Length: 442
Image (cartoon, rainbow, N blue to C red; front, side, top):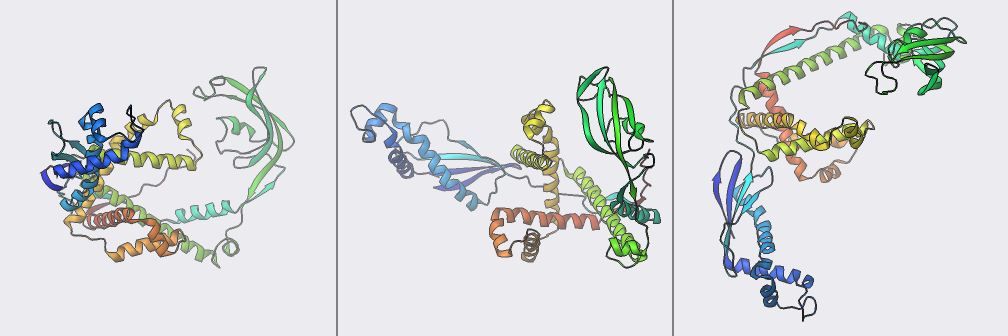
């Protein structure tokens, strides 16, 4: 067998595999030996019919197709290595229109989808905006308040319930005189103002006290999932068992000692300030890098991508989606039923984003190539060591589990990060002040 490059386009390479008549005959004889036991011919015990008789009955080419498959399947990986080709999808095979015969060689022409060569431009000096957030005393106070609430102690009270208090109660729901399914509970716990119940319900429990009854009248939203309740007025007969209020620990040095790793409140505040500033800087860098990548991609995305690359990315995205849903206890089949869709339709809807992802990855790697960046052995070792520590696995064992194919993707990931750093460090930023957050109660 000899291999040769026939043509090379931006997203496809065509090669030829030339087989001699001797190679074809040997492959055909091998297939005959493998399949003769499954062929029945009258007058012969199963598997004992001569090849000439079988070919006379079923035609000379009965074993040709499998012989060609065996030859091509064995030669194809060798040809890829010899010619330095990295496929990104499934190849297509052409044999020509002339019929094959014994002792005759043949040429298999294979078209292979490959990643396009991207000549990236304008990836330095990109002008973008970057949001800068200055940490204020109010930001620090908000974090301290959150820590206070996290360590609050719930205690029963005789006072009337207020927003943010928790009530323990029984309720029975009626539409007219009929009690409806799913509208009854004993010992329910509800934090007033949390928005767990339909609009208007929680507000009407404000002012109630332990041991009292309260009729809550609400109207279900028009788009309520239960059609028998949508848009209808309902009455919930409620009995309040207990009202609990949050007792917040006082913010002082003792708070720092009891609930943090610090001895004084001032030391704790300083640490909160530092961490908020680090988080803000990290967010600004993340936003800035995304803005730079977006601009560079927009300037370089006018190239074609093999459909197989997009389909592979769609499959990756779909599997990520399934895993995320499974972690939340959501079954994909049920999800499709609820939304009246199918897995095929979901994948079709992912294609545009998948194409963007593929082009972005190719452009970023093109920057790495243009800059002569490398993923060194030290880089790889450090990454593998960090992952091994994350999963609490001995390094050499983790390397064995990780596998060579995954190392290829890890190398690409390292190169991508280095390329993004180059683009980010050479960008021109206009600093934009972060707008204060809107009042959360509005």
